[in-house]
Amino acid sequence: MALVDHDSWDIEYEGCERLRHQLLVYLNQRQQLNQKASSYVQLSSSIQTGIEQLAKDVKHLKVVLDNAITWETSPEEELQQRRIDWDRLTSQLREIREKFANSTRSNVLATSGSAWQDQDLLPGQSNPSRNTALDVEALKQRKTEMLAQQNEGLEVLSATLSRQRQLATQLGNEVEDQNNILDNLANAMDRVETGVQRETQSIGQVNRRDSTWGYWLVIIALFVAIIVVVFV
Image (cartoon, rainbow, N blue to C red; front, side):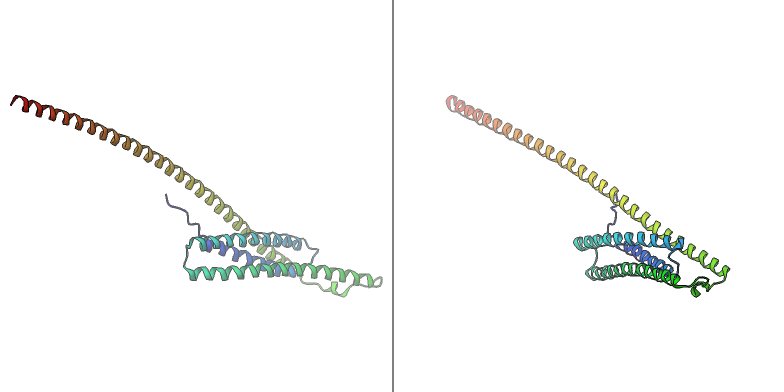
């Protein structure tokens, strides 16, 4: 049976990079939306979920790196590059978290400021900023594109989660196979030990039998020698 290659760095790292890139796309889209829009709320939820998943992936990537270092499955130059890549990915994850938190605070402050401006307006006056209107068809097209990009990002996130589940299942199957191999090896060792004991006992019996026959041969030889001396 072929063993599974546990050094899955390339697959894990590529998945982290895809998810990181998608999170940056979401953050840029989110900055262009009104905080009260439903798409803003959906993007915020997707970003939060993606950040949590990326944190888990980066943590698991460190485990893969540590295993490669412990078992020396890759050249030292490659391991050094992996350390650099992991440090950079960790720093990028921290930047994404800070950008998400800062944009959230900025939107809250902007919304609060807009509310105060509305309160300062006299009756019958309207906020000039709200009078700025875009073409309806352009807004619809833009919303359609954003929803399509969001769906694509969700598909990437779903694929990443599915890959994680597949790796976990594959690793569990490999551990089970290794346990079966160890059990078979233990049984084989028990059979070998039993055979060695049986052969040792047989050799002891042969040695004792040979010693008994030698003793009687000596007695017969002496008896024959005495008869020859007496009668001859």
